[in-house]
Image (cartoon, rainbow, N blue to C red):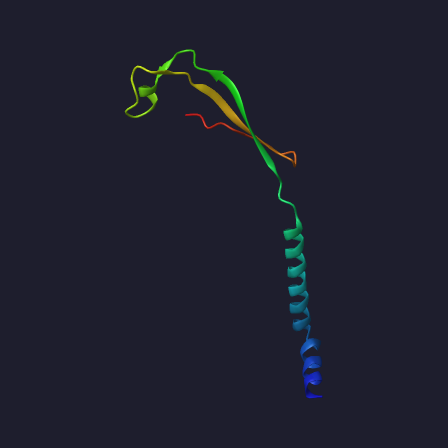
Length: 93
């Protein structure tokens, strides 16, 4: 009988009711957040130009050959989300 009396006194206090309600609320919120689906993204390359001048590899790479030409493509990255969010990334130099 002593255990039941302690439980009644412990759970009847308003502060304990608030703490228990807070813990239940946190548990429910964490379950809802965990159940949300992460958006999926697809990445596309969008080429918008290329160099008309044939650069030498040595112009762009350390110790690269000075007589081998290379064409340079200019592009941006398009990141499309299934949630409708689109992000355009320009990693230009």
